[in-house]
Image (cartoon, rainbow, N blue to C red; front, side):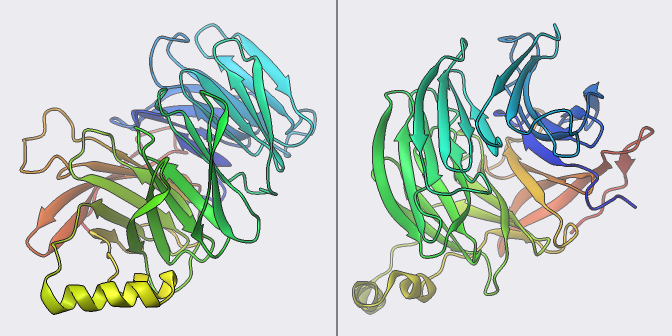
Amino acid sequence: MADDRALLCCSFNQDRSCFSVGTSEGYKIFNCDTCSCVYEKLDGAVNLIEMFFTTSLLALHAVIFVSSFLQPELSPRRLFILNTATQVKRAVDFVSSVLAVRWNKKRIVIVLDRKVHINELPHLNCLQILDTAENRKGVCAFSSNTENCYLALPASSTTGTVFVYDTLHLNALGEFQAHKSPLAAMAFTPDGLLLATASDHGTVIRVHVIPQASKAFTFRRGSYAATIYSLSFGPQSLSPQLLAATSSSGTLHVFRLCSPPARQGTNKRVSDLLAAVIPETVSDIVEPDLHFATVRHGFSPGVKSICAIAAPLEEELPSSSSADRARIFVVTLNGFFNEYQVSSTPNGGVCSLERECSLMTTGSDQISARFV
């Protein structure tokens, strides 16, 4: 059985075609379609890793990684940028531990506890250093869109206030309160125009329009508190757009971003009146948007998991909605990769398990799929 900490970290690339994992021995890159390991390097423990798309821009793959505390001769304050084809590696040192790294084709963002470095690409020149609120978990979201090059950060360590910054034009867009409790997870849509947020309470997920900071959707994950490990929107081609969330309960939630049917007559007047006179957190309960599809206990509770939504395979038969047959990938830090397929039914959505693979075995990784 896989160790609960078989993997130290995991992340998907920007187009969801690959994912990379860090272990106590090094790091690996896997293809999402085949779940096969396409690159492996035993170079010491890796505590953070991010891929740069899958283009030939930097010769096949470019990888950012940060060494782990498990590797004392390497510093967690040192960021490595590696071209895996040429093995050219560049190191950049910071004053404190690197907690998160995000990049697109114009900017690279390095998140420290109380500072954020914004560097330009491809030359890595530092453009701006932002002083931030305490952010020990490195919570952030960064748009992969180079026109809406937005960065979202916690503006407070005690409340769920979001700070949004335009890294392309180097100016602050503003702050807004997304939740009452501190932020636990955030994610942008591929175009950077919607931002999903979750607090450390984990019962409600909100979606906001950026840069206006207006609330577009409120989704209820559950009634009991849980840690939201990851949020992920689908590719821009999905219609309607989907949002996935994984949590410490071991459950995958999928939400569909489509406008609910218009409320008519007395019901609409009553709900509008309630929304005007009661607190926002209570009004969210009056008419909650529930999940579209759920996989309960799909993976071990308490084990960190990262999710990503990908478009249907090209050979899949067309359906009435491109969100149907969308694929959802989940990687857990105990060393498993699960692929689910979303489909609509008259009673809602269904996520069926298509594949489950072990990432730590050297032989056949494929495990027979079961339906959920």
